[in-house]
Image 1 (cartoon, rainbow, N blue to C red):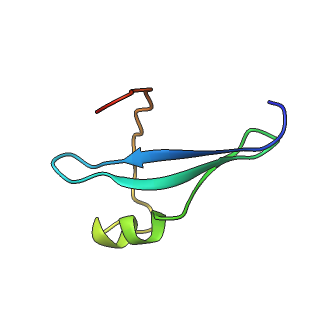
Image 2: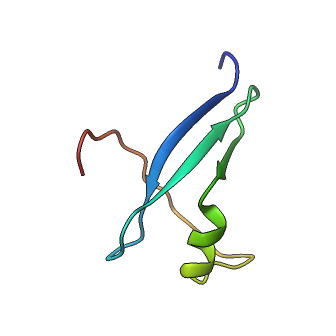
Length: 62
């Protein structure tokens, strides 16, 4: 991967509204969620040792 990259993404749990977050991809390929993650985690009772499965797909309109 060439350089770091920042992408706006929509994150949604089943049956809930989506939340906009920022996905940051570092130059070595590591990814992290920024802006919006803390509020999303609190609202969805996410805690240390929670397990997630993310499905990534491109869509013009969801």
